[in-house]
Length: 202
Image (cartoon, rainbow, N blue to C red; front, side, top):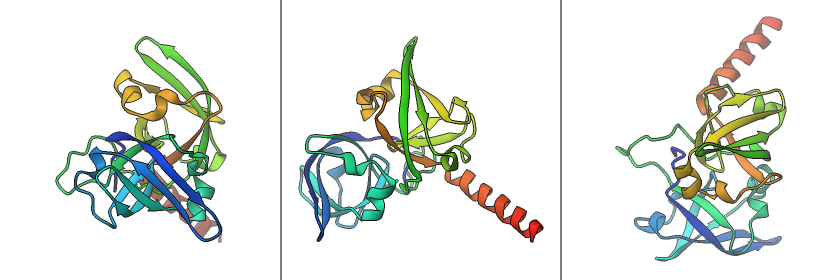
């Protein structure tokens, strides 16, 4: 489990994707302070398993299913990525419950500055939008954020300067893809509601 509070920005050092394997090597420092093989690290919000590690970088395997549901396929050498270690027992819960299991991707439609904050409008599929509520939580590229506005085709978040500085959102421009994970509590509630509706229909 993660909280959506990004610990550092890492850098893609190597991308291997062929018929026999798919791997990423990521340069980092803070998230490697106590890393062990088999640990989980969220990379742009995607939960990945450490299979090799040194003091300055770590390697993860990436399945085709992960590529199909996320924007990880767009990563190239030198691409910056948001990194967060799995939450430690007893750690501070500064964001919201983030599983690292991406629901899909969205696309930044527009950005605009308002005072000291920057608004991001993101378009997404109906399936994802149906699981979003205003003032609820959503993870964008692994960042725990509050939904400020919601329409039938998009949602918007307002980002404070600290979040922009500490994450890769500051480099995202209109047209860029972002990984989206809906609030897991909301997903369970919606599933139970749909099952109840189906039972009444049947």
